[in-house]
Length: 391
Image 1: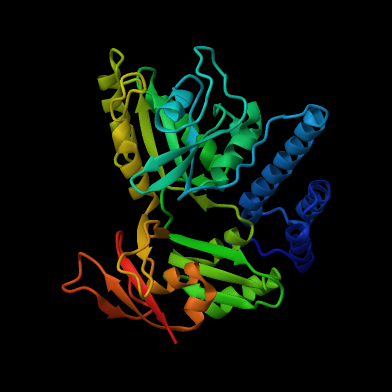
Image 2: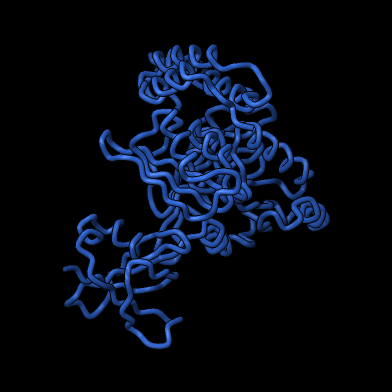
């Protein structure tokens, strides 16, 4: 059900988008909420805006508390490597032990609960790439309502490329996972691929509006989508529509209400008594929704399978570029999403490669012969080698 916001509310949202100062943004968000009509169609929007307001208030309060304390907790983490992965879990499930086991991070491992007070990063090598793994502070019940640094922890999950949901296999893992899923859902972070997905990438003023229909619209036309976007003053952006998307999906994307993050479930402490039985209960609860990896940070069991499962869950591929005169391809791959094309690769290498593109040669094990001459729409696969020829 569309929110049907009045023009003054839409205009105010444009101010929210343009405001960067946290104090000013809080004020404008409150003004926007006051302009939102109260009816069933706006319930989800009201909840989302209230959470944004609560998050901003808490962040501003934390800044005041830590302003005089040098080196206070920092919750924004710059992305590095092929993807940023957040380890979420209740206290004492072994998040610090996992980070220490698979990365170079120096972490404090303790039997005491709530040892981790701020996010801790480390680099996890997998074949010829690296993932940035970040241990978040523990996720607690009612985190989405602000309990126990919950807003900041869920903010890390929203900003990440993927999530590890970590549970203790010896202590009712199904209940632990259920709690985490509930908090993520309240924060509008979903771990199962939605039927339709809309991504809005804002561009500089004057860039214009581009709508890429990569799936199909099921209750509206492209013209209606464009009219809705322009009514919210989204005039300079690239809008990607995937799967089966509705006008509601487009509107929610404007408010960044829902995000999808791929995830795997890691069941730790498989070396303890009774863990196998609890693992079977967890598998019944999950019912094939996510991959479950049974591990033991203590013995090292299962750690070797984490890299491949993360790579597959994130839907990544590695593509290697080759210069025209070179005999070998570059050792460092470009990281792309599954089903990416030569066009996506050309854009990532340099805008000139896309603008001046003539053709490409592709070496691939799946092809009947290599190299094969292809155009921009050619779909790439993991391990492909590409040589781009320009005009």
